[in-house]
Amino acid sequence: MKLQLYQIDAFTDTMFGGNPACVVPLKDWLSDETLLNISRENSVAETAFFIDKGDRIHLRWFTPEIEMDLCGHATLATAHCLKSILDYPKDEITFETLSGDLTVFVENGRYHLDFPSRMPTASDLPKIIEKALNIQPREVHKSRDYLLVYDSEEEIRNIKIDRPIFDQINLDPGGVIITAEGESCDFVSRFFTPQASILEDPVTGSAHCSLIPFWSARLQKEELTAIQISDRLGKLYCKNQKDRVIISGQAKTYSKGHLWTE
Image 1 (cartoon, rainbow, N blue to C red):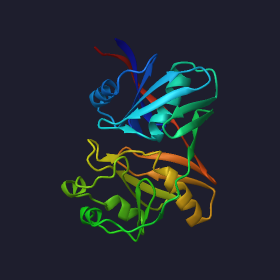
Image 2: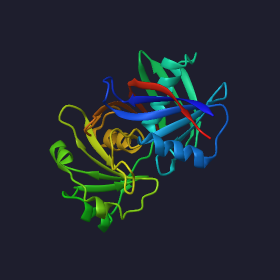
Image 3: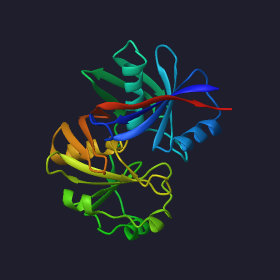
């Protein structure tokens, strides 16, 4: 079976920036094993598979290891694929997902993701995470992911992870967010996933489901700018809307091609 395959850099307006995701349109669902094998072969953090159902798009996300319940950058990449490559006629795209219906609005080359808010609450830091960090956080909070708050952007840049220790953690499907107020934006972050083939995710839209309400409350602002300061760097434009968050960004198409399955 021959399938289309697109690779798109999300949350960036620069080639080789942001977070790469593969997007595969389908007419019918393949087995979960096949979807996982395709994701492993693609060797990016997330591969998005979708079926166009007319009034909505059925969307699923796979890492090389597991199916995810929510992924921001691969959702943005899918919206970009639909609009810029496949000529999808609507500027409002509704995705049917494991996290419910998600809407993406497209305006002037920017994609606005309407995602659920996941306000983290104060938490203790598991000893195993503490041992894996070279710098300890000032505060610890948790929703799906652990959210560790630091004093400065410099500390975020200087965090190092002891991977053999970190990989002993089982947070399936979550990870660890480290964050601080930004020097040229409202807040910065980095994101790490234990036991994953890619330890540090370049830009993590789903992590901002917690980062946005947290920093909105902390900074007393409903609209914020954020930078995920990985090596590839990603810029996100954020709005806090009670039980929803709007995560906005741009995307660049890297490649178009095909894959074959048995």
